[in-house]
Image 1 (tube, rainbow, N blue to C red):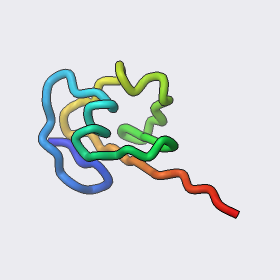
Image 2 (tube, rainbow, N blue to C red):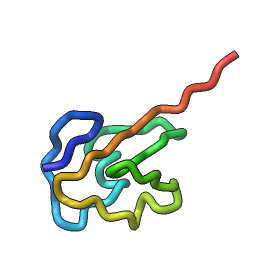
Image 3 (cartoon, one colour):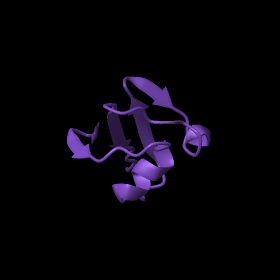
Image 4 (tube, rainbow, N blue to C red):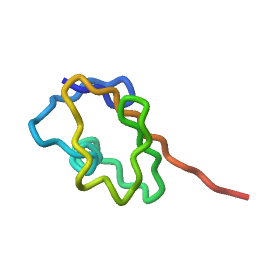
Length: 65
């Protein structure tokens, strides 16, 4: 089990940031992702493995004016 923004999600072996974003239906193009406090760059989303019991934070970056 992992927690994404404090919501429990079933963990799967080989789970990546991209998989988590897909499962949680995050589609916004500008996101900040941290796994256990570590910032994950967008270019790493496909390869960055999420360990079991991880705390994942996903933040939508907003702009305006």
